[in-house]
Length: 588
Image (cartoon, rainbow, N blue to C red):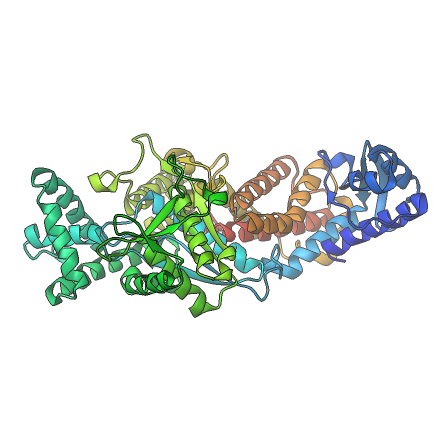
């Protein structure tokens, strides 16, 4: 009997009792958990029955409970107001939950709800004029976690990265290097390619303050690039390749991967063609200034103060494209190439209006799939210095932050190894997993829409609502299992009937809830639900272990049962951390 079968058995028993009491079998009832495990292992609220039965939920609960009796599954039934609380025999409850988890292994918590559906998660979308920063790390952590959640629930996921590789901002780096670079390269300067190019972007901003005419020069360079001028295109390719090499190093270190890359340089012309067809079908029109525009529907967007409909410019008077022009084209290419059922855009909250307009335009162009496009909006990430401004060279650089977090993690490891038994290579290997895990967990532990004040010292702590705390719980379990004598974990000897104290019940409750939390997280595109649940699971394990011995329990059968319980816990912790992009450690 699996966990789901156990719940179905409970539901069937409630249904039979309801039929006896009222002649009515409920279509569905939510099976949850009492606030205190001592009240019962499962709780069934009778609120949905109040309307069809025309009675109070409390009366319904009482009368249904009167028609129920204990059996080989149900140990005890009691009523608390509108809730029917049920206790299941420990050998059934603990045994079936652990066996279900062992049978599923690292697949526990997954489902097939998305089977047959193809979804693209587009995330990161960096510019090739500067290195990645802390905001990109939040985007990347969110994109990867949502992708893993979708994969865990049966979806076929295509992970995409749209590279912003053209435009005036890219030409600024090019012009600055051309003027003041002196033939230098990332290799000659000993820099990652993205950092090297980023320096020239900052240099342009500094020089432009002294010589405003540079802004006109960079516009001419963009025109030369769009005209296909060979020297300009060659310089663009060279500098972009430097950046791509640098990005690839950060992707590998932070655990980001992509199935497909799109480049704005490939789609901006296609966008113009689509706009032209839209003009012919009256989707777009020209305004008084010569811009090609799309008028937004009043019901969704309202109107301007003067009473005119709001509008979106899709081509400038000179025929040059804008970001939304390129996004229209890229959206169509993505769906066409990959036969998508829906598409998720992981982009900051400052672009919410942009995506509302984009999806409206796609619908007006006749693309019915536009209703299945979703903007996964996320909030800003702040440090004490305030908002990041890359134009001024004041950014929280992703590589620097990753390095700093690994230093903090290494310091924490050394404090826990006062005798200096760990080799430097081992310290660094652990510090990398802990440091990067700390960043990801801290960025994912709140809802995507919530802004974050990133605190490196708090994020790396081995105590509290952090990634290292959850990783440490897993390592602690691994240490217990490693010390177990041969045969102690023989599941055939496990006496699950001996389990059932409050700490064991609370821990088991977290294991049971995990699949539901995965489904909820997918439904909301919200990894913070997993972060909170894994933290609470780790906390429940620590509360259990701090109060009850495992290897030194009263007898071998209890030892085996508790070893099975913590092995099941380790599976859930590892799976949950994987969904967040964190690696586990066997020793910390």
